[in-house]
Image 1 (spheres, rainbow, N blue to C red):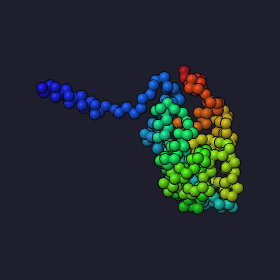
Image 2: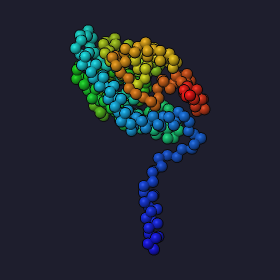
Image 3: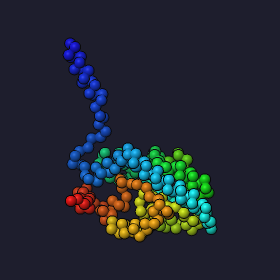
Image 4: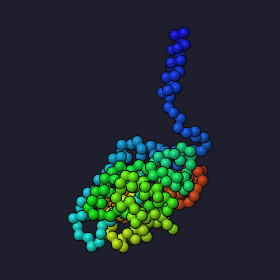
Length: 266
């Protein structure tokens, strides 16, 4: 009888300590981009190094504000920032989609933004509060669309971000390019800093350009990084990935092939 109880105890112990199954994924649904996005999301959520990189970016931005306010300006100053993966952390939604082997879906994305539950990127809130305390307006230029506006504002207001109102939230209209919206801000303000996780958040020189062209433009604008451009790490998605696909809608197999061709080995 003791042996039976001992065996039962071991079975119950294993059942209680065994890892929970998060989602059922059929192996044929998996591809390099999906697996890679999950691993990159793990880095964002769990790596102290990622946390440190974000703090490093915002610490540099903080110091730049201290330097900028010492200089005269003919117009009110403004900071222009992207939202997703720059201010708001959407990695929970990314994981949710990837565990179901799903790509980006605008309907499901709107369901996510409507929840207004995205966390903040490390260092973002304290920086924008500090910039606002120096009399600098914050403009959020995002490629979220108008359907996302209510949830986006609610998300920003939930954490108390400055200038979280309709006038300072410039969403995507007819094009994903942000240059016209930056010009709209610069018409009445001196844009002293731009923050983003995608190079197109800084200049239209990067809009829909090849990987090689993007790398060349980074070299040409090298002095701007850490000076006027503050870039946040995003290993999950962005035009760095889209440029590998040549900005085309590809099948899973085509994406897999494009990634393999782009990788270097020996």
